[in-house]
Image 1 (tube, helix red, strand yellow):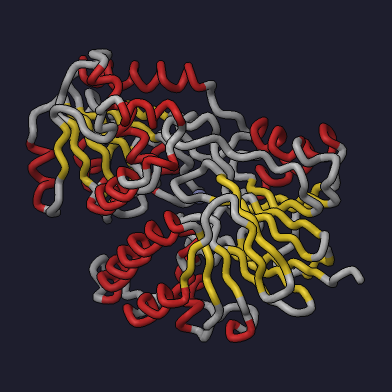
Image 2: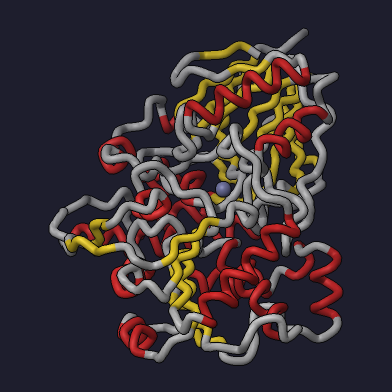
Length: 456
Ligand SMILES: [Zn+2]
């Protein structure tokens, strides 16, 4: 007999953040991801709201990858009563423990009202500890039978280290979640694996209405911006996400320096979290693509090169500012929403010789997005900062597929798929992608409504 199966989208609809999907069979309740809503003025209130379902009734939580918009509310779910099993790849579990502990530290600072606003943390250290007692791992490419109800199979999404796509099989109905699918070919990671057997596909769409520049062009532009900023004796400030972007930038600079393609200048990694994540990357060589693996076998330490300085204490940020130009500063956060990069932006945005290089998606409402729009001045930490520095944007290093990339991915399973649910994008991006999928692949693409129950 055919099994009853429904899906409800409790987050990640009409926004690129807050992933939270509920899949229910007669026997089992499964959540896929439990992320933070980020970047909107009401994020804090939204993230603090009780979950719209009975947390104690959830049996399993599957995590696609360790970005905060996919894991940020996991410990809150545990605080609110969830005692089921959490599953992810081993790499995602390790990255998540670093990210969730760091987030707790930041929230504890906000509790003291450091920036004048007092916010109560979403969870305590005891919830964090309890979370990781519940958290088990499944490696890529293994079939796991669960609850005598369904099986699950993990494929490499090629998005960040450990990122996975989930294929759930409920007695012949195959439901596939892409999580976030990677921008292949990526500098470090393997390509996104093909999906060919989905009956129902839940697909990310952050760049659903835009394409990235080609790989050759992104490499050329990166080299050009680095060289020109060095020539003008300025500082090159790169806001970087601690996962993936920081490691990719270090890897690209490592190659450019060692091949003598850019002058050797001081490079600062001013991101304690980025450093911790880089250490996890350095231990996970088997996850890199074959080109990178052979460089490592050839003896190259891909994340280290002459004149790379890694800072630990926050006092060092001042020393970086004082170091004579030219120099390169890599600092978090990736969308300049807090973190040490805002300190460097305050110093170097007013300097016409310097460059701020944005290398990733800047969500609406973030300081990064404001800088991307190049106003004459911008407010940072309560001060108005004039913008005289050069502002550049390279989207090709994004770890998300672009519009053509997603259409390609879906086309592999166009023959089998009954419905494609387009999520994790701003409305314009998601609806554009829905239209493309209908027009070009003739599949039934849906832009789901939050909270509506869809029968599969
Ligand atoms: Zn992601």
